[in-house]
Structures are given as structure tokens and as C-alpha cells.
Image (cartoon, rainbow, N blue to C red):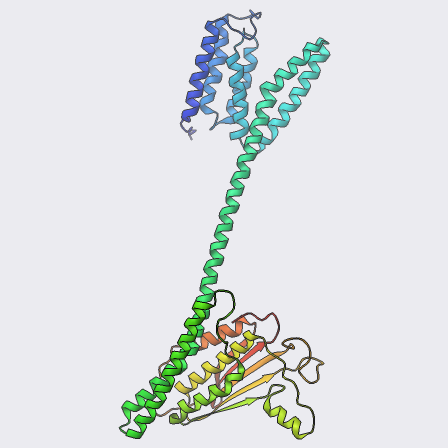
Length: 426
């Protein structure tokens, strides 16, 4: 297996060439760092110079090797007349070893060179016993500790910049993910609203228009056209309400009134009109504390009418939409008979009457819609199954439970909606 050495950086090539040129110039001018040392010929000082200059080409790719060779070359230079360029090249190799080396090496070198500087200073003073001996320690610190400390500082700044950039990218990615999730959630919410508001009217229009085309009777056609016109007008009004909501609700609050359970009577009246031709009747049984039925019973007994605990707006809207979609499905698929809508409210634990406490009063709201199940004569409107999905989503957003299916001779839709102040907005 051969060692793959990347080509040197162009700056490193330039640095090596300039270093050799400067060293040769100083040597040719007779400028030596230790001219009194004549153990070796003067030209011997060029060997460490050229060796360290060659290491400049590998300072980025092999910092550990270049530092080891550079240290050996600097020691060898001390036995010659010396060259200042050799010393300067070694300082750059020390700096590069910290900047481009492995993290462990970058951490150790400043500490190691600092200890070496202190040890050389103490040893020089103890050996020479002159104040000038401190200069040896200073030179050692400048040649080794100074470049290592500078490299460590630069590396820390680079790593901090990289970490900051990564954090910024992660923050931007998380923000984009949150934005995408918010868009998906809002699209799902608007899809539920659009389906629940318009499907009821369009189903009635489809059923009665089919009946008008199938039955050759002026009275039937006139009645069907009346129902079609009424549902068209109401559907158009609902569409305008939704468009107004999209345009004007930018401040965080809806610009138009939100449907609530107080509108169930009108909703069932409309369902009776739309379902009369299919033999359907609709009944509302409101067993909540404070309902008209309970108020009548309390009045007959001579007791005070119990106060109805208010419900959070999201619970009111979800319950209304679930009843609305269940009635729409009954108009499409139910056999002739009575569609029963039941509302019940858990009484707060230890609460007695049911009106006390803070907003919501705790407990849960139960919505049950029973539709006759069986063969149905006459026209039917097609279904897509999106209604059941929307009802389940509304219930789960509030942390409730939803189920729909056949129970004996009826199709039952049951939703349990927790009543609490922190309910999620549907």
C-alpha cells in the first residue's frame, strides 16, 4: 500500500522558495546566527536550511512529520555557523503543526513548548549564572512557544467559526422544517374546514338534482330546485366566510364568527329540509348540564336552573364540525329513519351541579351520532372517505378519542373531546 501525498499548496511552494532564497542570500553575505562556531564548514549550514524548506511543502498534509524533521534540522543547525532563515522556517513549521495537526497534537504542543521554555530558562540561569542567560529562554519561547500559542489561538477561532456556522445552518434547517410543518398543518386545517363547510351543501345539491332528473314530476322538480337554490346560497355564503377568514385573519384571530354548538338547531333544521325526500328525520338530544331539557326538568322540580359550563372554542368548533360531517354522511348514505345526535358532558369530579370552577370545568364532551344503516332507495351522493379522516384529525388534535362503524342496525360516530383550557385549536 503506497502512501498518497497530496500536492503541496501553492502558498507553501512560494513559502519554500522564498525561504531558500532568503537563506542563500544571508549565507552569501556572510550573515550567520553563530559565526564563532567553526566545527563544520560554512556550507554545512545550507543542509538544515534546504531540509526545512522542503518540509514547508508538507506542512499542511504531514504536520507531525514536518515538525519532527524540522526539530532535528534546528538542532543540527546549532552545530554550524547557523542561518537565521532556518530558525524562521522552524517557527512556521511549529505554527503549522498546531493549525493543521490533529486535535490532540494541537492541544499538547503549546503546553509542551511552554514547559520546554521554562525548563531552558531555568537551566540557562543555573548554568551560566548571568542575567544574559535569560535571553536564551526568551529566544526559546519566541522560536517554539510563541508560534505554538499563535497557532492554537487561530485554530480555536476557526473551530469556533465553524461551530457557529454549523449552529446557524442547523437553526435554519430547523426553522425551515418548522415552517414546512406549519404549512402542512395549516393546509390540513383549511382542507377540513373547506370539506366540512361545503360538502353538506354540495351533497344536498347532488342528491336533489339527481332526483329532479330521475323523477318526471313538476312538484318534485320544483321542490328539488328550491332545495338546490337554498344550499347553493348557503354554500356560497360559507365560501365567502372562508375567504374572509383567509384574507383578514392575519393578526392571529379569526375575522369572522366561529361555529359553535349553539348553532346545532339550525344545522339540524337544514338537514331535515335536505333529507325529507330521502325519508330522513333528525333529532338532537342534548344531555349537557344546563341544556334546555335539564332546565325544564329542574323547573318542574322547583329547583334553580343549572348553569352550563362554557366550553373552549376549539372544542365547540370540533364538536360542531363532527356533527355537521356526520349529518352530511347521513344525507349521502343513511337508510330512511331517524338520525339521532347526542351530546353529553362529564360532570367535574366532586362538582355537584356542573357550572362551577374555571373555564371548561374539566371532564369531556361526548358527541354520538346514530344513523340508520341499510339499503337506501333513491339517489346517493358519492363519498371519498375524507370526512372520516377529518373528524378523526379534529378529535386527535384535542387529545380525544374517535371511532366510527356499524353497531347493530345503525352507523355510529362517537367522539370524546377533552374539555380543558389548554385544548389545541382545531
